[in-house]
Amino acid sequence: MADPLQIVCPHCDAVNRVPATRLADAPSCGACHKPLFAGHPAPLDEERFRKHLRASSIPILVDFWASWCGPCRMMAPEFEAAARELEPNLRLVKVSTEEAPGIAQDLAIRSIPTLALFRGGKEIARQAGAMPARQIVAWARGAAA
Image (spheres, rainbow, N blue to C red):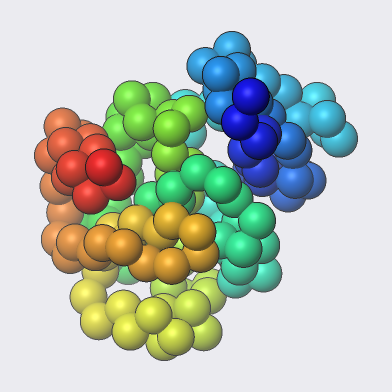
């Protein structure tokens, strides 16, 4: 049997060990008992983002956005819809470049919205600009393959 995956709870940030074969069984966090996947992007600050990036066994799709950005606000419900389709195989998170400027600077985020896909703590793909949910899903699945 394969080693269990490490899944970081989007609520309390506890690291949970979940067998890959059980991802689709709606696993709950061993610490806070909330669902590990709720079909919603998790809003993360800089510290939480770095923990998820460091500890997660599944790919993480990040929406870098800002509250003043019109296209970001337009894409928010599309990213939410993509989360319902892509979880539990990917973790979807939102990082505000206003609240986490250090991350935006470290990753050279030049425009928003920007989607970045990470696997094993490393960026593997990036796409700038607002997209509809179906395009987000197709892009993320293709990039994660």
